Length: 259
Image 1 (tube, helix red, strand yellow):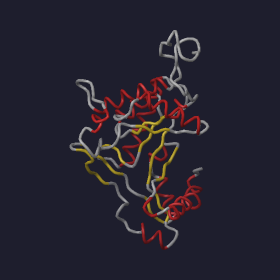
Image 2 (tube, one colour):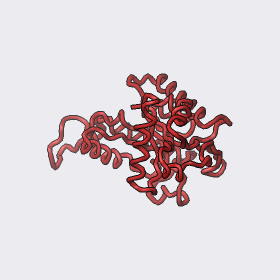
Image 3 (cartoon, rainbow, N blue to C red):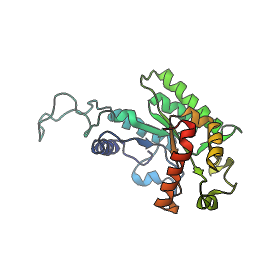
Image 4 (cartoon, rainbow, N blue to C red):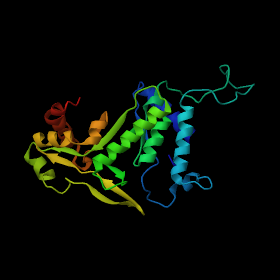
């Protein structure tokens, strides 16, 4: 959101949701570390004095969330080229219900709490910023709990949604074993994605289905979420990735009660 004009984005999101028949689930966030220094400046944006680029991203998001509610805010021209409806004008196209299908990607507890306060759904990926030395799935579950508490305190009436991402591979044939049969990714890793900001990268899950079921049943963040997103190795091609997803659906999901 550091790079986005929130009004242009609201127009595009409304149009996409209408085209999709109200099925758009839109994930937004501050954004990942950049390829260039302060790239948002080239798009004409700069944080206000005393604020960071993350503050700017949240400010853009708040404007975006406000205008997609569909409330009028713009004073109409008394002599328009085309007739206007009565009252203040809203941004068009407006798609009813889109406001409830906005997700924010959070990696820290304060951001998760802000997400809950703003009434967005929570997206949490395969890394979070390290806030303790606890395992990744525990830290992620704690952020989810903080999000839900902030949501409740803000008084939102609908049920919030939470998604987490995982790399999961059911080893059901020799090709799976060749790709993912090693033990290298089966533990969390701590590292730096930005100077001075340590992150914890969640482990991958790769095992025979019965072992996967046991391992995944112990993942506290998966249990705290209502949606699981699978990350797949797209460089291995469509056919193999279709097999990866099918293997999870057929051999793992039933044993965990997933649908």
